[in-house]
Length: 437
Image (tube, rainbow, N blue to C red; front, side, top):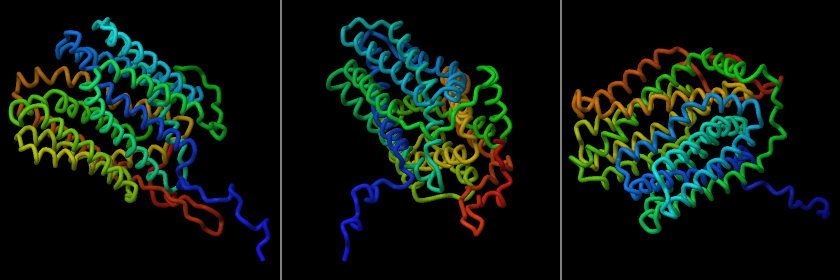
């Protein structure tokens, strides 16, 4: 007979969440979904807010550049701060700054008092908050996942992020048309407040305490040594500093022009971007199942299709073909994204994650303003078609160059194998790529 003591208690019921989706991971994913939803809608709203005040395309570019400049300037400092202070506090403080700046932006737009310098200043504050938030958030996420299911966790996280990006842009555009940009900016401020409150409840009791360092400059130097001492790390960051720059030029400058002249206007270009977003979601879904053994080899091979959209615009191909190209590019780019996060999680010591993430972010955005600024002169000097083929060629060349780095080809996924003596890291005997920490 079963006694009452043998009956299952409520606390013994199996959790509905997977083992890898712990409390911190779930909070981080939910908060990221909320902020991405609001932020991508706000990008649309900010552009229309500038136009509604009488600004032109150049003014829209100035406001966008006002966000990028402080992001580039403060990223490395943000990484050092996030590895020195509790990361969740840095994230909450950055969310608070973003909330206040977006709320002020919304009030000015709704009251009809917004001026160009107001919008540039408030956008710059948002970029500053992002510079401190991004390294802390990446370090917190990477340290919140343990075990062999890390890549699946990162894939689900990125799927939520990409889904929010696509939905946020579409919802933001619809809301701008229905109720105006000011209310969309106010909704973004509320999203930052909600996400900041969620991040305040992160459990950091299991995070190792930071050992006192020798100051900010010493922390930056230590982060640089960690970054520069790993050929696979700096090679991929250099690759994407160039690739992201030419992709930004193609998407932000040449794409709309090709759409206007050959594809029928803004609607087909928006449809193509939507297919790219759908591809990223599909790619993340794929990576919840696929675990390539050679992480960076598989990921880097999947960067080659990033050249396809520029080539398609150079031809130019019909809208249906362009949409298919953009979808495939989104899928393959997410294969790289999940593989890259898994490699960082596996190889970088926990106490240096945010500094390494800062160098990664810095490389990703540093050349983007220059590339977009030079896109127009390049078109004048060489012609749009030649400039687009140049973008595609550069992506292929830098990606092929990265494959020449042995550590990129040889870094393997580590799995725990249980033996008579306990768990053993299988990569100890298989992978020549070793961490410095």
